[in-house]
Length: 98
Image (cartoon, rainbow, N blue to C red; front, side):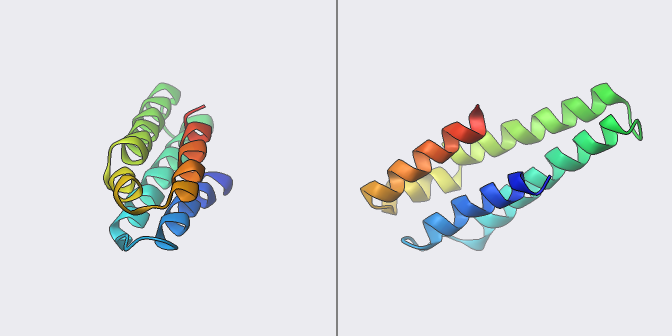
């Protein structure tokens, strides 16, 4: 359960090492991952309807993907990151996608 938030925090840390990225990027990724994990857990334990848990979790995952591919994290990476950081960022976002 902890790997998803840690991986998304890693996106922020990689970009923060070489750009002036805002803390808002961190919070958007972290909150999106928490919503995804908590809704999945609630659906699996039948605290909420399993389908509803899946739907909320999928929407949170799509939100995270949007942030990584088109949101502020992506714009910071594209405009300020060196090539080697951009390569790492690109590989990591495809890992989250698959």
